[in-house]
Image (cartoon, rainbow, N blue to C red; front, side, top):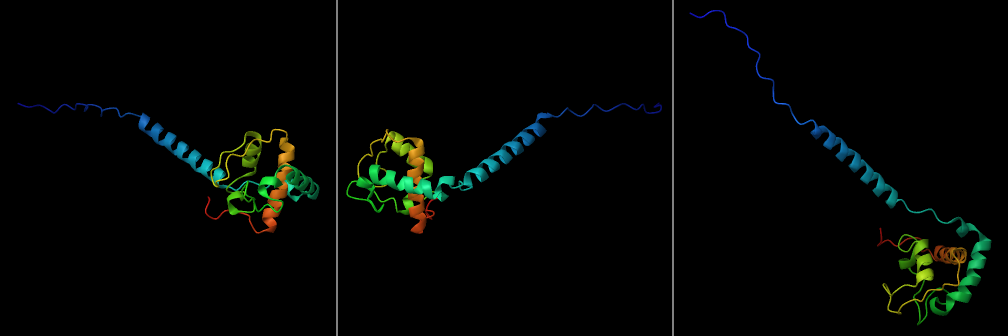
Length: 152
């Protein structure tokens, strides 16, 4: 004979790993950080304040003529010894201002042109190079060279 059925509690469901939610949160935070980093790196750098300073540009012109023109030409169109700086390859989005600083401080092996290695110009200070760059950027802008369309 069977009596009233006794209620039994079913076994609790197996406990799920709770770390899955944390993994998704961490992945979301990491993805968001990556998107922010990409957005920041894609933002074009602000031009240096010296580019608008006529005094810095004039000083940069003199420094350029004394230190750079022998290879890059007095008109920045290059010579048999060095490449033209009035070229989209040297536009700010392809060769930023810091690349000029590094080239002057440490020299640079040929990588766009076949002129040989540029020797460092260790006697120039960062401030002097910034003035040279201000002059070069002003000349580039006057020539309509503001960005290299083939370079991100």
